[in-house]
Image 1 (spheres, one colour):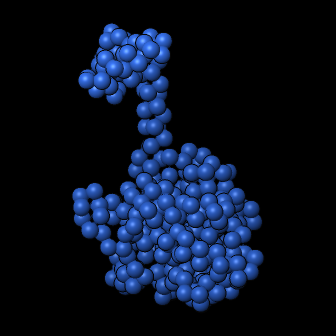
Image 2 (spheres, rainbow, N blue to C red; image 1 turned 90 degrees about the vertical axis):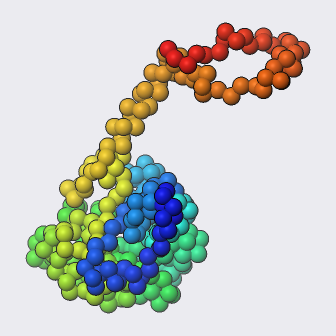
Image 3 (cartoon, helix red, strand yellow; image 1 turned 180 degrees about the vertical axis):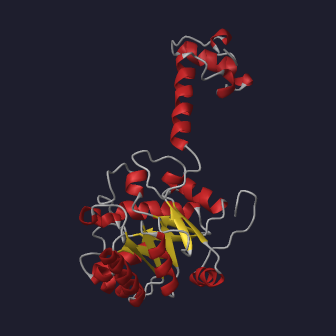
Length: 303
């Protein structure tokens, strides 16, 4: 339900495929907490990705590498509670699937069983083909992720991918590998719009972009980028719709000033004893050798 009581129906794989067929763009955003997911659902978001980017945006890590399965599952479960009627994708963290197919299947299954996700996402194309196939064969919906893959940033070195002919071929090979392995969806990150357009037009599965241009079947953004919460850096492909960081600092500054100037808390912020209990409580104070409060001690509603 939205805040206005309008019924929201969770998207299905079939719904997302129909959107591709009709040319309807899918909106996709990351969320890591129940409130974030609740806001996304109320806004009519088609999908939520509980990305390993939560490690940077929520947990304060320098990059996504330290994120653990337990941390990821905790964020996914919180997002599910906040958005029970939205399609949610769990993002498998570094080393939760790279070692072997068995690890990949076991950990992917935890997102479905323990966190209530509808699908999982993992990074890699050609190198990840057997992992994708194993997870799909286990009956789990899979989103591939190619182009700029943050978990491999130490190898890739730069943000944008596919800007030279050899790089573009590598991205295309990865895209086909993801589809051939049986993945149901693909995310392309930080690639030229022409390359995004080409891949999107060639594959049968829905292809979404985060920094992939306008021709994709849908768009993803990091919620902390969209709202201006994350301050370390801002990728070129981000559109900011708010500056929550600035608003938050100003709000907290105002609170600090109110406390220092004794303008908070005021009487309107307080819970008072019941009038019929006043004498008894004062007698209790006296019996315990505590100084009874006086009416003049109460704060006024105003400076």
